[in-house]
Image (cartoon, rainbow, N blue to C red; front, top):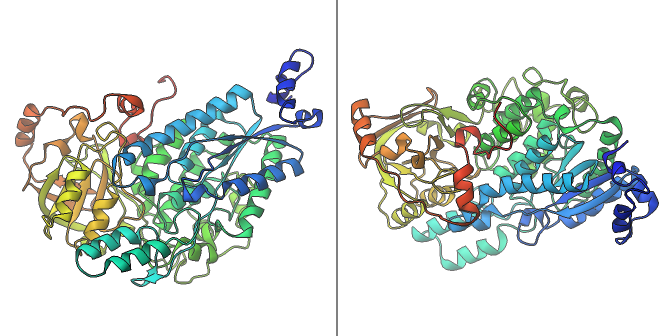
Length: 557
């Protein structure tokens, strides 16, 4: 008997049937599996603007296959709109609110399964975390990426072209009218942003994990194929219910490794290093942050797109997308893993191969022999720090320079815009971790300003905050332990020499252990930035970035 039938059986639960009937559900509807449809639609998030039509197609598919859809809303915040101001501190904490709210709705109403509709940065991992926690039949459906804008500086423009444009405006390279034209044309329609940022990385990761239909991740938001994918996903969830295939039969240690491999092979966002550990935690799987570095070093970089190349994610989709890359990784991935298609990875990939073009190469002749993410250790980051070699010019993968320290993102951005940063320096932005931020904001604006000012290849940035998946330059984030917890990053002084060596996995402060011990003795944590509301609660509960900035949701074993 399905879960829902236990609370819909007459006569004991006639009251529940009456409540459903007030909304037009029939006896036939209530005799079928009740499928929750968690929809993060809003008119705030461009990546979610089309989810009303996507949800309708999903619901059509559920009904066609013999289920009954029950739709409810989920919050979702836009990283882009929140960038560079206080709003960014609220973005990462929404991930756990999303996971919790989906759990509460599904368990309160005893749905038999769940379809998760979202596209953007923290919404996708929050939904996957909920699926892993609930362990019911579940499927993730994205809204798809937006198209690129007109060509600008050898690539199609996108929403991040604006902040780079601000840097060029400050440098006197463009006019106010040029910037306004860019604003009007760079992002021509809805969808998740057209570069390989966190949103599209996580949608690709969801497919590699087996939680989305094969080939579906990068179907464009404005394509009719997006609605066809949604309808097929609605049909697929009913089949998963019939076969009793639950999320933890799909989210396994093997499929987690597949997802990390895929992320490495496409040069995905550093934020994956926050979200994969969180998903693994909810699935009660062990996960070591160093897996990203280990797998990246043994996974070739097979696909390359913005911010690492001029191609965007639509070009990636038209070149074969996730299946084309995974078909080149079959010697490295677990092809026997189950997927929401009801088939194994091997069955999904049958007959698929790389086009071997300017976007997707082959295993034999990749862009690079190692992949996209790296983890660095040293006396600045004893628990690890995360970087993205695929987005760093080879000339910058070894960098040494004097520190210039800032205790907030805002301080750093003001200094950059005032022209106070010089080539050769290492910007240290601290007290921006999960607890210190609080909320671990992205240092997106700082790197974009450096890029616009021509300093991206002349400086480095080290932070206990995080980055956008679109950032490039020499950058190291997620430094753990964070400054607010008294991590060594809090002890760095202006002028201290910092050495970064990505190949050697090193992030070192060239200061003696004796001197660091003395500085630690005199260190006092600053006053908390936030003393009320959800951010205050989050700062008390969030774990280190090295563990995915999770909030524990179960008793320790």
